[in-house]
Length: 616
Image (cartoon, rainbow, N blue to C red; front, side, top):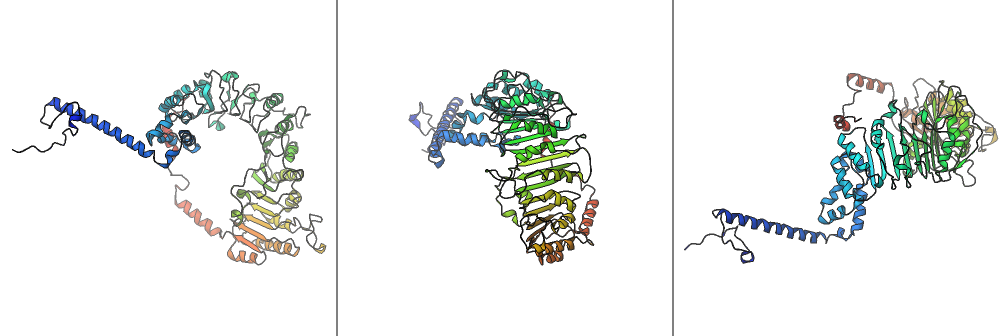
């Protein structure tokens, strides 16, 4: 008698179950088949659970499992709050993948409220869930509503209902949107540490009036607020927000909302720990008829201040600076405009600038060691000065020395003064430079960079930079160098240390031993190269030798010319680029042959935003 073959669906446990199926086939009754399927599903579930338990036990043996949950939470939070994740909406929620690795990591992630506290508005459906998972953790609310959907606005409105939990709030939106959102904010913000409001990303190009902050915003209760940044938002300087700050940044205040000097001083007195002060086009203004500083009364001491940035009329900048006392180590950045009546007189700011330059280097002060003078426009000049021992790479390095200095060296200037005026004239930038150099303590400057002047005669070099008695390096960029060549061989009695016998006479800037020429055109037929050679030889004879000559991005200079220079100068560094008329003609022909040469054809990553609408 033959026996049927074993059925793979037969119950392998048999008596261990609540009932026995024996051998079951697809020909069995429907009820039996249904029971068998149900039993098999239960066994599969049990098997899956057993496998999960085994995987968990196996994962527990991995080296990373030694980390306690507290440390894992810290690592997860660091990843979630990494700035580069929030630069683009696509990456803003990638941190949730840590919860998909294993059950333990998921449990740790869900049990860490701070992991979910940096709210994501690019995916509005996630906002409510993050508000729940963050429990009572302090919230970070940062959103740009320049382009958005109504759901993004709704998500932000929901988040602002939790103002009592908000720690960091940054909003970029139109005036109308701010009125819709912020005028509804009620209740104190006891955890708020940073508040940044910007009246539309593109308000630089509009005449839209500023957004007036509500007088009772957060009911005036922000005891932990330390950073306040406002762009095209008008605030009352009597506001409780202007108290206890360490960072204050206010830009583009409406003329009708400008504070008085007494209001500014009163607010600054409420910020004794202020470290960073930025007021751009937001200064108290003196009447147009006032051209000299009035008598200075109250002076507010701000001994923690390390950065000052002001923008406005020159007399208004000087007026504010005169009412503050701060360390000479604070960096100073000014953008000063002289009105028509003041011509190009910037003398009112000179005392404050001089105080920030470190003087003669005595009493522990650091003097300026590096100076850059940049002609920004026909009616604008920029001064920059550094205290650092080594010159900043992006300003003073040449072809060979770029690798000599550490990239970690700070490059922010100690002083940066932009001076602009309403009238034009090729000699006016030089006059402003000379007046500034005549008052600045520049005796310790070792490197000088003069950039982008169209007219630089010998008298300019002599009058403006004659006091740089320790100067070692001159870098000229995109300027005519005839005046520099003439100045370098000019006899100036008593100009610095005597490094040569008297019979040779004194020469201008005798300590200079390195010259960097950038963007010079040694045009064919001109005597510029011969004059440069004569200059190098003349200074060598006077024992004020130029030992290092660097030539970068210059035109009409060739290898034969460089060889002539190498016969006179100890170290000549040339970038090897030969530029002349032939190259220009080839480039022009190439451009003319392609009618779309000047039109960009690459894909724009922001194209997707064009499908969104501007929400007002």
